[in-house]
Amino acid sequence: MPDTDPGYIMQVGLGFFASKTLLSAIELQLFTALAKQPMTGAKIAAELGLSPRAIPDFPDALVALKFLERAGDGADALYSNTPDGAVFLDRASPAYMGGILEMANARLYGFWGNLTEALETGAPQNEVKHTGESMFAKLYEVPERLDQFLNAMAGISAGNFKLLAEKFDFSGYQTLCDVGGATGQLSCSVAAANPHMRCTSFDLPAVVPIATRRIAQAGLAERVTAVGGDFFAGSLPQADVITMGMILHDWNLDNKKMLIRKAYEALPPGGAFVAIEALIDDARRENAFGLLMSLNMLIEFGDAFDYTGADFIGWCREAGFRDFRIMPLAGPSSAAIAYK
Image (cartoon, rainbow, N blue to C red):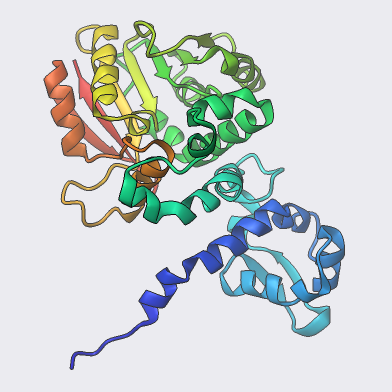
């Protein structure tokens, strides 16, 4: 009998234990509290309003999971943030990326409990299941929910947008339009790293005031503009570079191809179309995050899905694009680039 080990099976099968422990810590703002000073378990319980039963298991579990550090043992031990926790999980940090995890806790954690039903029916398991309204309609009708969603997208995208702004050669271009630009983050990243670029962040009208405020806060209002519109209702604003950050995966194949055609039509000869996603590897064997994100698209939209670089190239070639490049970005994400 070959050597076998059930450890990995248990780790993945009960992975929601660790996931929910981290999500609850973020919901309770534990990392933000510890950014002010190290605390004993009793102090954590008092600060966060926890039951005595939560101590020491809750903070010690986070120590074992490498999300907290602990100096000492017993009741007098002091808990503090790890370097990564201090940078990425303290709400006061400019690099805070907990927004996506806040949304995961508030929305996705419960929806993923219905994955089996989604696999059997192909139907979404989010708000639409109970209200009949699309995910975006529900998100955009409540300002607090919209703000949480935009913060989530900003947190998960910051590293990718910064790398794109640095790695992509913008020297031959003057203008950029980021389609589905949300808070204007991609446009601001490109403008900050490339002083000659003028950028437009294009999204639904409800997002424009939020984006305008964030752009002004970044000190880039002279070169970055937020514009309202619906990318399904008409043509896209013309620009030398058209970007879509985590947009194409939200839609079915027909809508993906429609958005690619619109990008092609909005570009001049030599222009570039850039899609930023957790691209699945062409063999569909390695990028587990991209494949799991595609299952998340099933839960959110039913017929939406993530895709490979080869898929992207095929769709773009069909639309008329001539040259292609895949640029690795942060973690499992990449920029898929098509040139007109």
